[in-house]
Length: 131
Image (cartoon, rainbow, N blue to C red; front, side, top):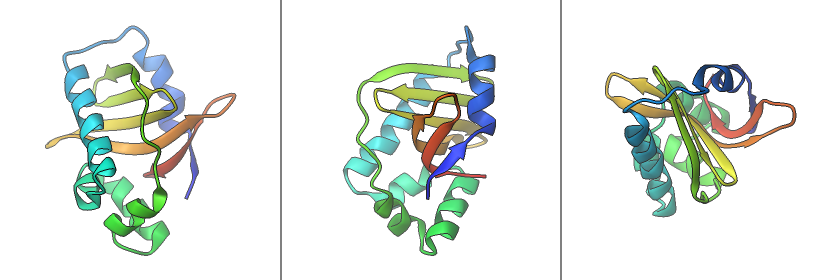
């Protein structure tokens, strides 16, 4: 279920350069919580951290509930965090070997895409994504 994550990935480098905010810690924590849930194979907890459209796309493509679909993706364990960029309601967390994209919702940060690797020239190829 790979997809080229173009719209957000193309805009983020332009909008995030030099922008920092107090949200960096919240974004980093949410990304870490997602990876902790994956490592513990707590698929339902990891699914709860996905944006609604991402969860919907995942279940639709896999034709099964989110926990089973996410387990089948076999997302990589992240390396150390290289960078966290936040601009408004969008964020990007770069790990060594993977990038996550997040958006802020009324109830907090949620993952729009995970398991993303850069393609040259951009965009990203993401294992889990929304539309």
